Amino acid sequence: MTQATIGQVVPDLELLITGGRKVRLGDYRGRHLVLYFYPKASTPGCTLEGRDFGAAMGDFIAAGAGLLGASRDGLKAQENFKAKQEFPFDLVSDQDETLCQCFDVIKLKKLYGKESLGIERSTFLIDRDGILRREWRKVQVAGHVAEVLAAVRALDA
Image (cartoon, rainbow, N blue to C red; front, side, top):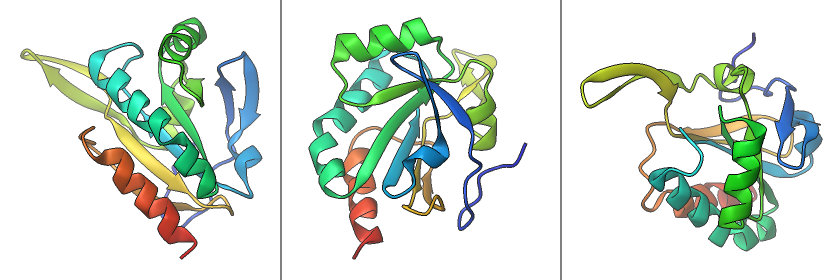
């Protein structure tokens, strides 16, 4: 599996997104793409992050960017999360972790003294040509969406 690397074209992976549709990362060529990974659908931090991205969706569209959220949750959980929160963007169900591995977001995490493998909250900015331009790892939700939006706008400046 090829890993996504800053300055390189991202692999053209097939994704299962809400609505039961299959798309490829290459389908987003011609516009920028913000791809953000979150640990688990319908949890407090992930809900807040999704709402923040959703509230800024019009700004991302105006800046020429699409948006996808991704986690290892199944399609039904993603569908429910999107519907309940009324997200104006699709969510990726990456149960086989292909996308997660490509972007190297599965990390050893500690919670209440227990270690487990899980998604490290991360965001990636892919330009119109499919080239990975920016990455944010160990994301703190507060203020993150504004920072990503500024980076999207800077691509065309």
